[in-house]
Length: 372
Image 1: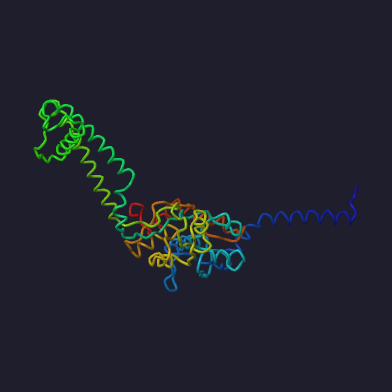
Image 2: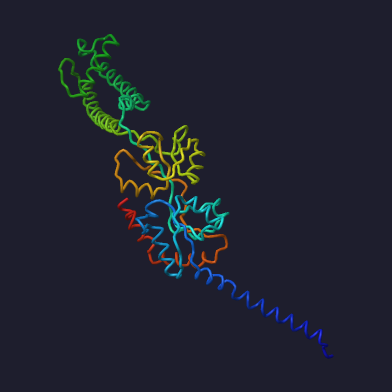
């Protein structure tokens, strides 16, 4: 059965559309990637040292050096647009003002709803920068009035009373002039003898004369020597610790009703509020440091690597970074949602990780772990 002209036209049109659709779907991603890569991207630089460092018209830092390695490998042409903060740059990216954000951008679920992140190139965390104040008189004597010290003193007096009683029982018949038959006086003299024996003072006014009394006194001398040594070491340690400065805030549990400086619109703000602290927003770490130095805030919560780098550049014995780390999270580069550049950049980041370039770049600014 021969086809008429109308049917032939429809079949020809159908096969042509199928061929065009197949050809387009096979090259769509590559064309999109090539077109983006060949265009001059507007790249926002934002963040703090040591990740983004501006020196006149030049830029350096951990994030900058990693991005330059990636951009060179992918032959990405770009121009730099500086921003005051990562949050500001993320907002600009989400509304299409720029094409990428380069800096210590924390990868969070809230941000990931608006932009697309690469895999993390650095693992960071929050820590607490606090002030070390000189101890007051109360701070120095307070350790001597703890329950543990009072308990130890009670145990010592109890043991001393037992030793005094044993000495009195063994000596009262042979030496009634030293250990009277009257129990209160005799035990009191026995305790005095135990104290003299423990301290090795040797006044000679009271001393055991019986074999049992001397065995008790000798045993007590050995035990009391060990006990006294431990007590002196404890007192010395207490005096040393009480003479050290007092850290105002060393953990998140101490945030309650304290003024804590945090970066505006950063994860640290929610973290402080969750721990019942009062936030004082800052625009950069230097501002927070100055507020802490002038005692206008009690602590600063900031990304740990930035604080460590800042104190290395500006040593201050009155400042200390907490041992505790919170909200561990990765830093990544940010792009618009469904950006075709994310996949190839992730490949380049993996290559930099595998050849230890990421580690080397970070250590050039922050030092090796043994130096921290």
